[in-house]
Every structure is written in structure tokens, then in C-alpha cells.
Amino acid sequence: MEILEHLREKLADIFKNLFVEIQIIDTIEEIPANSYDQARNQYLSPLFMVAIRNYAEEYGFSKVLGITAFDLFIYELNFVFGQAEFGSEARAAVISLCRLYPEFYRQESNKDLFLIRSVKEGIHEIGHTFGLKHCKNNCIMVFSNNLMDTDKKPAAFCDRCQKKLFGKD
Image 1 (cartoon, rainbow, N blue to C red):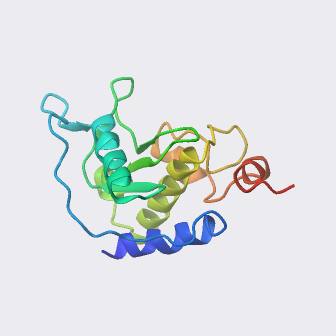
Image 2 (cartoon, one colour; image 1 turned 30 degrees about the horizontal axis):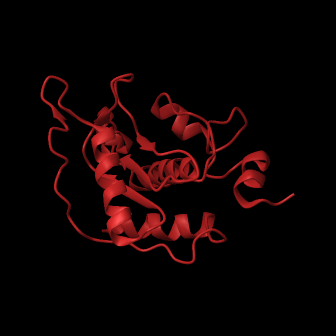
């Protein structure tokens, strides 16, 4: 539960002018049917996206960030840290905590590092739901091909993305 509260606080700080409130909904939804790929030992991310979008629509939320401990993938990539809808009607985003834990890579546990990675991925995916594309600047919207990319990028938007997101000059 600590991770959820930490994410809520950090995302509220970043998106304070776009959201009135960020709520944590502590409910357990069913794992999307047919999402598990036994050969890969992973879960298909787009099926999680459908479930999250349906949840957002059913309960009237403008944006929903799903958080899972399952290892997610899309067919084009070996894994994804997260995925999001894109565009004016976008509501759904998901992040996987699985590969954000140092322990996944047989490294020493580091709670602070895990929390920073989680926040970065959450900000990045919600940024997509507001129409932000991947960025080439020193920005949270840089595509993370691996964990080093996530660790290197800042937990903030570059000036260009900030202007797009908040409409400020």
C-alpha cells in the first residue's frame, strides 16, 4: 500500500493543474482473461489496457493508471515497464512494478530506487494519456528501452513537454 500512496502524492504534485484529485482505488480486479502467455511467463499488456479503460468508463474516471506486479509485454517487445493510450480520448495507462525492483536483476534491495522508478514510469504513462509523445530531450517522456534509461531520465518534463501539457509559454 505504501507504493500506492507514494505514487498518489508524487503524481498529484506533477499533475496538480490537470487533476482536481488523484484517488487511490484499492480494489482487486480480475486478471484479464487470456492475458497470460505461459511460454513467456508474462502477461499481455494490451489486455490490461482494455480492462483499465472499461474500469475508467464504468466509474466515470477521466484517467486511470493501473498498477500491477505482473511482468507485462507486447508482441513487438520482450517486456514493457508500462503502456498507455494516446490521444484526446485516452483514459487508460498501466505500469508493471515487476522489473522496477532491483531484486528482479539480483541486486540488493533498494526501496528508494524502486519508488523513484515507479514514479517515473507512472508520470511517463500518464503523460501519454495527455497526448505527449516520446521525447528526445532530457525529459520524463524519453522512451525507456531498459532500466538504465529509466534511471537516467529525470522525473520531470522538459520545457517543451511542460508547455504542451500545461499550455504555458
